[in-house]
Image (tube, rainbow, N blue to C red; front, side, top):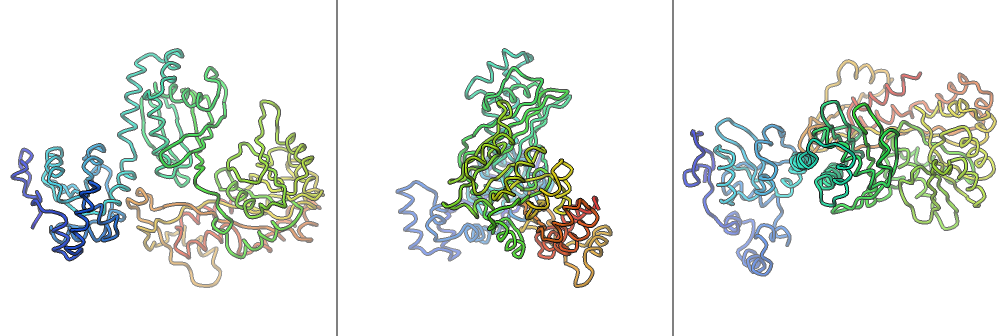
Length: 585
């Protein structure tokens, strides 16, 4: 049976006349004809259908008689229609949006190509005559049907539509609720209504953000509109743009959820709350900031159900991991993890804590805020409002007989000095610091006013890290380096074979970015007697020369280059790490 469509007429073709309309056939009979299932298996499935009411295709997949791919391929051959792998299909947003999200999800259909007089349409069930007729009427085009695995279709909906229609509709509903009034009283009333558009809008935003693996949600008032963006794999993506009048209602609702002062709009505020979604509970860290056009809100999303990463799984090279574990086995000293905000420092520290956590050790953490909860640890969250500062908690911690102390961040001289003293007096202290590489870390402590002898005698090791985006495995392909990338490769590789770089071209699986997921790149500087002596003399030039000799070929840039050799990341990502580190030299 040929399902090609006839030329488009002025009006949408009637169902009876539609040349691409499938003939009425039973799925089971088609699969038996294709010899994908036996007549006996079909009868067993039909008997099960009478008991459960589920569709035959779904039952065949659930019982393991056939896979989704075989089912779709069998239908494609029998009906003489294309089979499309949606994981690698190059979607175009404007073509997909020809079919509204609500209709796409209802009929389980997706527009793949616009050929002018016809549309290529992925349909979960190519034998669904009702869906075909309704889609023909809705799209007012002739249709060519393609068979696709149903699970791929469901994932494609989430990637391509991203709840945009739902979020935009809720934003319009909230705007209508508020009308032209933006006074405090009316906003407070709207915020207090459970099930109001503001509540449903926030719920949809959180669901969309977790669906795409976002780490942050940004609500940003602009001069003419409200911009809502999400950060995925370290890169911000625009979710929607709405009327700027709904911004105050969203922020006030978030403040109520976080227990903040909704009457205070002139000062920044920080809080946290939890959101229960369909599949997980999300911890949300909320930060508000007054701007020219209203309060901006940023939410960091932490999935409680994601599980704690182990040191083996964070991507640290095997030789470095072995040395780091040896450092963690020591009974005293300071271990620092450094890097910019969002480089994965907290993940590394908690992986280290999970590694050494044992019944015979007393481990206390001092954090702002407590991001992950580990059983067996004593975790304390600082609170500057009641003067429960890092320094104050750290002093009290030393009287709690700890073996290991985690200090969330060395923020000031007082905290750094107390932490270093604890390391000198027989405690293993883990903390973070904002520096650009491992070599410059001791001098950052000196800049903070810590005495050189304390740095030299307590600092055991420094790990510097960054996060690089990984190539999408579905669309990764060989890449030809440009002139800048070739120059960087030449500077990094003195001898040996240059890598054959790969880069994702962009597909539906990675939302057209070419990247899917991130991994840490690391460098480790261990302090030895010679480095300790150089650090105690406060001689930056001598210390850096010695440290570079120790770390030759084992820097952040070299680790990134190793990932390029493995085809796991692109040259552009490695180059970004290389330039970031080289700028300071």
